[in-house]
Length: 196
Ligand code: VGL
Ligand code: ZN
Image (cartoon, rainbow, N blue to C red; front, side, top):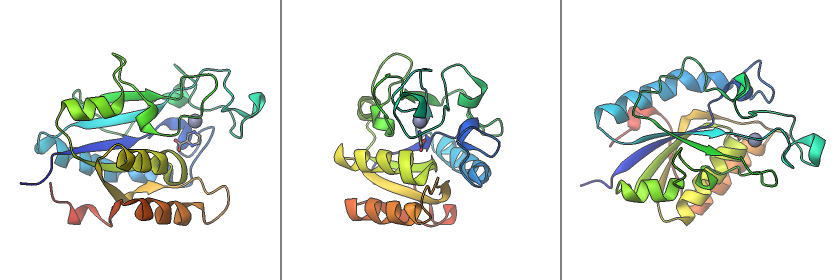
């Protein structure tokens, strides 16, 4: 019997896609791939979580207040909405993060669902032992979510065909992949190798 799995879709929001405030190059290319993962997890009746970056207008995460990023994914704005082609079904649980005025909260494990339950607690309630992580961006929120998932005791599979990076410097994503592997993440190159 395999360990119970859950799919975690990280920050596939308009602001991280081409045309958005903090666009990740080819960020939208993950959407059709993630839709295929959603289908597989839904068919296997396994939990699906979509995290979202969910910032207040004033936060030390933004350049105007001492951070490194342009304004993005501000709560209740179009930029914070999930990409319109992402096929999130009604069973998907949304986990919001980055809502504090003084915290970057790159990790999905800093986030909570609408009822205020933290991600790790949700996963434990559902008996999940293994998480499959894809989305945006490889070198920030995907990386931190993967590493925090491992620290929290979950087995982590990184979805290699469903991630794209910001790459403030050109090899940031490569470095992030190395860090995630060193921390214990398993790399799945393609959905064709998925076994649930
Ligand atoms: C992210 C930079 C700033 C991400 C969020 O979702 O990877 N990156 N905020
Ligand atoms: Zn952010």
